[in-house]
Image (cartoon, rainbow, N blue to C red; front, side, top):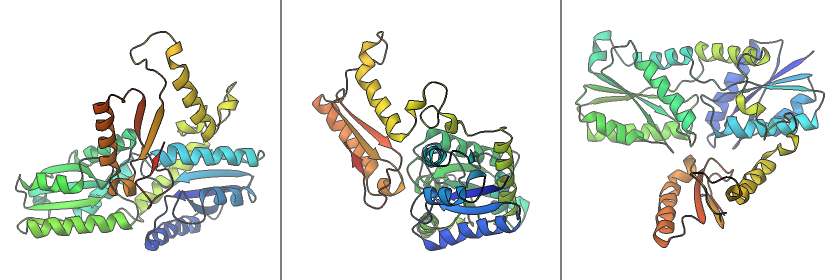
Amino acid sequence: MSTGLLIVGHGSRDPSANVEFESVVATYRATHPDLHVVHGYVELASPSLATALRELAHRVDSVVVLPLFLFAAGHVKNDIPLALSQARENFPTVRFTVTNALGVHPNLIDLAFLRARTALEDAAEAANTAVVVVGRGASDPDANGDFCKVVRLLAEGREFEWVMPCFIGIARPRLEETVELIARARPKRIVVIPYLLFGGRLIAKNREQVDSFQARYPWIKTELMPHMGSHEHLFSVMDERPSQAMERARPLPCDTCQYRVPVSAVTKQVGGLTALLWSLRHGFTHTQAMPHVHAHRPLSKHVLICGNADCADAGSITLIATLRRLLKATGHEKEIRVTKTSCMGRCGEGPTVAV
């Protein structure tokens, strides 16, 4: 049986970030000649996830999908399983398996520590150093929680005075807020670690904010360290995830969700549109059930507003808060619901709003 490995990246408008991702894929391919290793992107770059799945399925009997994402948020939990659901329908004789995201792993924590340690000339400097770890930020609390766990594990057993998590977008606290807060504790040095796999616009944004802070606080030596990037620690985790998935040791839970793949007698619920319609049906039948604490009338309107990075930068978070406040002030909050969503696929055009 021939096996193909599809390594999935997010995709970036910055070509250099995509080149960096594809370099990691090429390195992995060179060290695994027994696999057909290809790549695809969720958005913003080519080939798309669907195209890569289709082309690989024509060549092999078994496809393993490896999401090269640090944490499982919307793309890993929703976009990839939906694409796999379609691929399984189109290629019923091909076996498709998806791995977990990279997740909370000791090797990646050690890699983050290596980035921090390069800023210090000796161990004694750690006592007067604050480490700020910057995550991508997600609309998924589970992903944000995993990131905060990584930062806590990074701090354990090491001599840094402070180790603080923050985010570049979507979630809070943000990088600007965190370094301003730490500055009041008067550390001699602040080391900023971007907990991001590849370069791109977010790294440039980190650089701008660190430079701005350094200009305001010249007496605190503040350094932005390299992002995670290509490293043997990363490749070791990339080796683990496919073997775990093939052995069913750590399957991706969303890949067995009844709304994603056929399960028992609920096969007709599979698919993104079907899952949405099922959710809407619940909204209309909600009050027919036994009375319970969160009973409500059917909604007349449901307003979805993207809270992902581009839309958040364009003001979507403020828009969400404003709409909710106005609805409450006018007494319509029970019939019109405003929900913050993950990416709706219209990056750069937002804030994206769907009613």
